[in-house]
Amino acid sequence: MSPSVPTDLLERARRLGALHEGAREQRRPLVLPTVWDAWSARTAVAAGFDALTIGSHPLADSRGEGDHEEQRFEDVIAAARRIVDSVDVPVSIDLEAGYGQEPAALVAGLIEAGGAGLNVEDTVHSEGGRLRTSDEHATYVAGIRAAADAAGVPLWLNARTDLFLHAENPTAVLDEAVERLRALVTAGADSVYPVRIQDDDELITAVVAAVDVPVNCTAHPVKHDLERFARLGVGRITYGPLLQAALTDSMNGMLASWTSRA
Image (cartoon, rainbow, N blue to C red):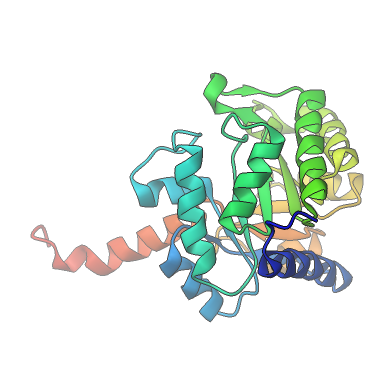
């Protein structure tokens, strides 16, 4: 283990893994609210959640920046550090496609931020939004796992694919997506995240049956139902930008009668 890794980070990383395992044993999804600042993080913890995720989209919005790797890696790490320090639960950090960092540098930044896990996707926004090939993304994920192992930190690695997101007909790419997800598991992913299938029961069921690690789904905290995801076998739930969007709707409703246009 690297002497630069704080003991509390090791404890948080182990705790995040234990929470995933506990949820799997109970056949319930582990819900990780997606937060973007200290206030949202503290609010989620006060509501009773034992772990959190930081989403790139809501974080970018909170900073007045653009999503899709328009933020600087150093700024993301600094902002995430403030969020992590504001709570006493494990926090996973969405690092998009890696911000152009090599796996070792990405893991070093994650450790610097105090992240207990990470989300990494295969849409390379800095290169015109191209999708990494299956082998390319698996190699990148394997590099992250190797770097985490070398640092001695059991980081939870949630490997995302945007194949369904980019497809005109998501059902038509199911076989290719399953192949891609299985390659990510072989590369060392602890969970997989096929984006944009949360409203399709058949696709969720097929993906869950195809891999032996938890499947992450995006959920809207108002429009979606936890019991449905549990019934379909989903192992992990994050909100992406949808919690922030739901709060925006609520805020607009609360403030509407106070504007000069009321």
